[in-house]
Amino acid sequence: MALEIKDHAAVKKPKDLLPPLLSKKFNITDVNQDALKWNKEWEAAIASSTAEDVLKEISHFLDDSFFTPDDIEFLHRDLRSLQGHVAENLRSLFDEGHFDTIWLLLNVAEQRRHILEGLKGASEAPTFWGQDCRAFCPEVTVSNFLTQGGKGFVDFLTHVLEITESSIKPAFLPNSWWEQASNLPNPWWGRDSDVSPRKETSQSTKILFEVATINRNKFIGHFVLSSVLSIVRDIADRSEGMKGVLHIMENTEGYVAQSLAHVKTTLRDKPLIRCENCTKTAEDIGQGVRFMVCSICKTKLKFEVHYCSQSCQKDHWSVHKRACGKKKVTRGLSGTKGDSLWAFSDSDPVANLLRNLPKDGGFTLRDIGVNPCKGKRSPAAERQAEMLEADKDADYFLFTASGERVRFVIDDLGAKMIFRINRGVVMTQPTDITGASALGEYMLRLMSKYPGLSRDIILKQLCAEHGDGITEKIVQLERQSQERGTGSFIESWLKDWSKVFGSLSWLALL
Image 1 (tube, rainbow, N blue to C red):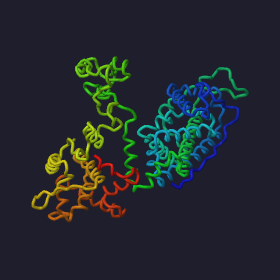
Image 2: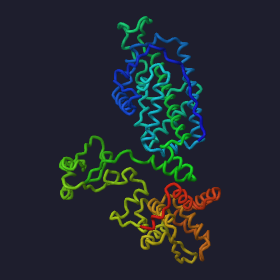
Image 3: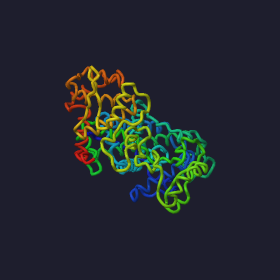
Image 4: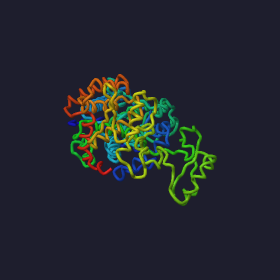
């Protein structure tokens, strides 16, 4: 990613005019002493404040009478200049550098570090209120940006780009929390001024709110520039935290990197809480539910077994009493702490496939089967599923024009695993034509010249099993594979995976 982030020097704030009111009020730690503590204190302060509280503090030293129309015009031009740099840099990032994939592949500690660098840079940038401007920006928090594996940050940058790129005037990012402070009366009007000399105090805060809004958007602009500069520097320097991500990006055709990045955005941030008896979550039950825990397990084992009601706890007692206070045992319900795949959604077909594998340690590739269907298979696909369940050593069954069965078995264990995972997804979700087309492309490559079979015969069977649209999808995959010169989709995936994660020879031990 050869990209230079351009810095922007804005107008300097007046010296000795605007002391750090908010950071002093909330007793915020110096960012250079402890950045994590500094961030935690700011997030708590923002969560406990209203926009009216913030405006009241800053209006203690400034009001509408302080600013002239020329001042406002200058501040608008200054903000627009900064936002022009922001839009230019973000457009380059998204168009040229696979920035979103790189960002999503970073571990959470690295993502947090870059966001903190952005917040630190924005706090030190030349704005009227310095780091106090952070209190104007409730959406600019580390916790918001780390959601969905970091997708919250990508979505925020995308939104900033849309807003700043589409206007020739200063762009104000909307925020309902902040806008509640617009046009409030001056809470200090009629009181003795702490600043002297000063013009007569204004009753209104309309102009002050506009100035604060300008500085709010300057803070956001500087945050964006500082955070992406931190990331781009790490890419250019191949920093320790960036090496693994760059290895993936540079040693694959893109399938592995983009798929891993996408998977991260679908992961849960924390385990679900489900009732151990009825299996429902708070969302399933509705507002007002408060889950209980088994007090004996919590006291003796420091372990939580959840119930949505006394009734469910009583119904489940005949099962739970065997382990109560003795062993840390739950049903391992999907998405809960007891589920080793809790981060994956309940609708993730691959995660569900893995959840259904034997849990006695005797797993082999044979166990990657078909699984129950979530939908309705075609009659041809239903026949395929029944045959695969009856013969777990077969990877697929093809049929000659006369109906003679041809048993398709893959020798390469890595390809077999990837084929079977795709097969499990396809058979579980019949509408997944993409997965079916990967299977079809692979089988056509290996079996179209087998005695009794041909390309047309295999395509006809696949259309009967997965719908007519699969032919077009397979042709599209074949065209892409030919352009890359990497073999079929499954072969390319296996090659990319091996480059990044090493040989899959360990599968022979299963």
